[in-house]
Image 1 (tube, one colour):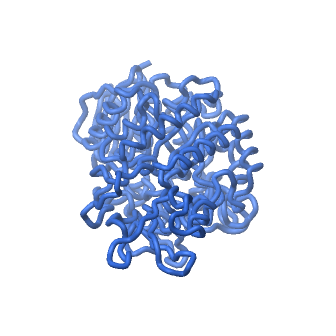
Image 2 (cartoon, one colour; image 1 turned 180 degrees about the vertical axis):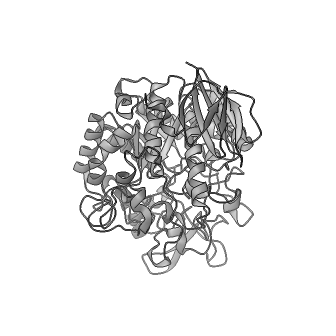
Image 3 (cartoon, helix red, strand yellow; image 1 turned 60 degrees about the vertical axis):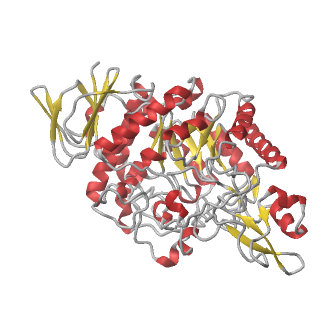
Length: 560
């Protein structure tokens, strides 16, 4: 039996008008667009807003509720746009404000919502505030909006503390003062081109409340908050007392991450958001030690959702997956916030490649692994994710089953972390390669002038054109899954699952009239036939009231 067992739920019939749905974000499927790599309208090899706008009907027909755009603001692009020079302008490589306005309007006409990235932890070193801070020298009021400090040592030659950059090396850079002498140091938890704001200074909060209103007035439906856990630093910027600090992230509360003071910022922001109609939302990128601490960001007077990085980092293992599902739902229930589920994004190796490799290697992997196995597991993992209560995120291209490009030549890499001696692995380019739309063309339909990162030669058959209408393709699996999710009241909604007895290595749970069975083991298992099969990620066999589920396969049933 193939996945097309659910032919009674056609994708086109399931496209609802999201504007009519209350609390739409509680069970929304949100699609992440990485603007550089989605669609290029002018043939310069770089994706842009007009390219995204031209492809919105594809996203509507895919069946998602909202589109989240990674940064497109004016930026020197030292970190692919996460170094913002002007929060109220579009970088010319992506278009202009009129293009942004047209994109938002077209999306709304197609019943799609638009969520934009907001980067409040740091600016670009080309931001006007920072340039003036350097020009004006020590004691400048503008320096108080960042973290400028004198150095340690006899001549101030040592950094103010021992904090390390996420991208490697010290988190401090010493500046040359206007008189030509070496002077103060400034804090940057990421690249030196990304100085951290000082959120203790009232001008910083005033500025970002104004930025929120600028984009809300333009019509955006929400914000994804980059490094939402990083705004507030511990008083006095104390030493951490250890090296290789990156290994501690996600395990401990750090003096520069997940400080309790961030929550007052978000309470103030929530007051602004609630002034606007249309159920607009905040989504936190918050790396925290536990899902319980993540839940602090989504209390009723703060943000609406927070990314579930604990789930993203879990291996394809039934026991471990059940643990993180239970902990997530238990943590979110007391604050009445929806869980979120995500398998890939612009910072990690695509899950089709992660699952192609042995477990325990983390979220940045440099080897291709067993691609057939990876795709089979990725498809099964997708159906499991979409069956869980809450909101799900889809990263562009995962609906095509794209693998990570692990063999990019060194000379084409652009991830800034790749060029540093320590810190992140720097192999994020592999998940950022532009996606293929057609079988032919200089960039498989991405644009008419090639692509800023080279695409593999075998991506023609992974293209949207090649997979559309192909019954067993991953694209059609996604389309059918999203249509089925919308048509089944027990999918997405709610805050709990009823676990069913299942063989070792198998997850089985009920949600009303819906049952999901996911086999993560390495061999076929036999389970009860829980009802009519709605959808499967691979071939199954049904006979005599039982269902034979192959390894790395997920099945959706309905008892209705």
